[in-house]
Image (cartoon, rainbow over all chains, first blue to last red; front, top):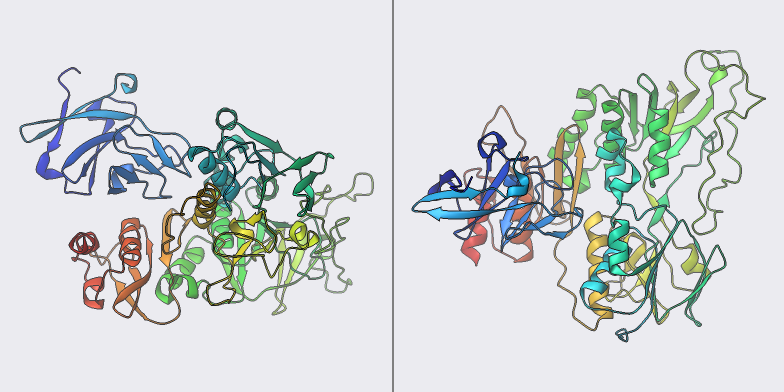
Length: 112
Length: 458
């Protein structure tokens, strides 16, 4: 996986939005959510650590994503949990912009 | 008054408010002792008790707000399973039911509340449940075998969620509420109607009214037999509990004296329109009573909650109250109703931590809440009743989705409620808190982006 996986073009994810990329495509344990926060791109495991919810549907703002169900807040940079009701963080994946392509490098410990 | 660096904090109540306070104190650098006294076996998050945790039979560990490791890491003196029995405000000590006396520089009452019960013949029967604690949820779950029939009294948030969860585990549900459409003040008429209709659509027998009595099952259906209310539970006279005392839950029938149960349901619920429903259990979802007993005994000002000022100070120096139990006095001296929502408790804890650390708490925005039932996610912010005009944003796809409801007052948003459209409420929340001007036309137009309104205002 050294080359990473191209998941979308930069223009595919609007500012403040997330995109869910299937685990079938990423070869990871969980789907991966890719976020555009003010033009910076981030990738986290998609499933909230609290209950079954897709973080790709969350509210993205100021380096964080709020879970769409119960508003548990996670850092986009490293997946750390920033507020209850979640008590555990989610895995973060490195994102690289190559030309206009968003390339995700899945974290080694999250490969299926 | 801020806390000295080594100041001792004793928190009574290990729910969300108390735990949030402790975490925020440590995050803010407080190094002094922090004790949390809590009657439950773990610091429990309560919203899942009527939702996923109920359906999934989640162990209590999954509902813990803090893991044991995290408690140790934070250096919290966790007194699980303990009740505070006395508060000496002058000496600033808290006495526990095991005789321990905890001295404190700041005492924080985060005692929450207990589920309200209703007075009716048979109302003290062990078949009548309420839902506040993990043990309550387990008892209801145990009564809800597939095919069991449960009467849920009250179709507010808890009653509605529980009705959904009971259906999910295969129970028959009868839901009774005095309002033909409950929750209108909380969510507006349109959304309230949609939500309430989901009960019947999921096979719930929905009634209007209340419960008048619960009669013994052996007489169910025998018109000539005198009906008699079910026997009371021992020691459960309403309102006579000492702070923290847990309800006894005796066996359904005492061993030895129990006749072979008659086939059919365990009891007959009589509704106040005279309707009779054979049931196996009753659950009351009719709100909470604030846990003020300790405060009252200590001479603190209490009025349907512990009265506090904007900085959570009770009428006695060094004693604070946060969360469901706290009733903050408004600047004009009035006492608005207590806020019993989850996030408010968390923000109370964080705000008091800032105050105790000598910092200004973050400004409090419009209140936010959620509810999950029948596979949909409801959330709301601000208010949906009072001055203003309700504006509905219909779903783009007329065949699917739900409207978003807004309350527009004076050219600004005052509230919003959505079903399965959380980001509309997340946007609305920011529009409310930032006082961004909006129009009914924009709000009603599903093609207009609320997020763009926010961006434009920046």
